[in-house]
Each structure stands twice: as C-alpha cells, then as structure tokens.
Image (cartoon, rainbow, N blue to C red; front, top):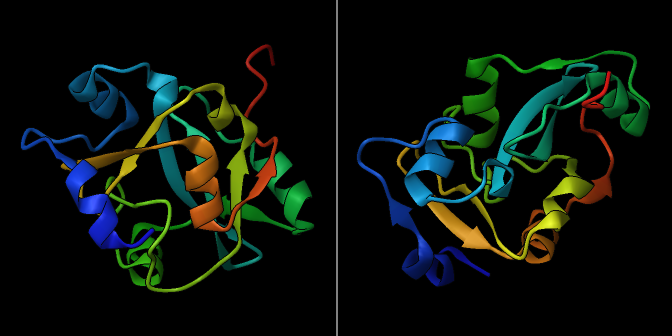
Length: 148
C-alpha cells in the first residue's frame, strides 16, 4: 500500500494528536488501539519499535531481541534525521532510511489500530497484521510487564 491508498483514510485533528492519549481521545478509541512508533538506538543504530498506546517498551527485552549491548531512546534530532519525521508524528513505515522494525504482539489484540500519518495532527487506521507487514516488522514481545 502506497501513500495514495492511505490518503482517503487519513484523519486530521487540528488540535493535535501528539501523544497516544491525545490521539485516542480525538479518535474516540481505546488507548491500546493506538500504534506508537518509537525510535531507539541499539548500539548506536536506530531501530523502530511499534507498541500499543497503553503499554511501555521494555528496553531490556528489545536489547535481547536485537542481541545488542546497549539500547536507549534515540534523541529527537537523530529521530528526525533518520526517519524524516518529528517525534509525535512518526508513521510506522515510509521513513527516509530503512532499519530493523520490531512490532509488539499486543497490537494484534484489535481489528484496527491507529498510527501517526507523518504529523502530530494526522492519523490513519489499519488492520494490525497489514500494518506489521507494511512496516516489515518482526513480531515480538517487548512490552513492559505490567505486574513488575
């Protein structure tokens, strides 16, 4: 699916949908139906992690999945340079550079998830399996354990 096919489904929220909670409130969906696109640095190499909006990424699980020595959140300037997008509007695919993509299994809990469409004001719906396929993601378990 290219950008042209996505355009009819993109929804614009002038007041913004910069955070997962803002997006869920604007759309009127569950927080877990938001797909967050988060950039981490694994031994200095950017990696994209797709996570449901109600969960947090367990950096140690990401490190284990990647076999990396160190995983940290990427700085805003690195995110923009690498993806071509600012934090708060990063889509799950269509970035300036290709990288490894990990998608948390929690995204599969819904028939539809909503992801940023390139700006903090735009989102689009997509079936999770379709989104994961378009992103070229490996399906993994990298969310924080809520009971920890």
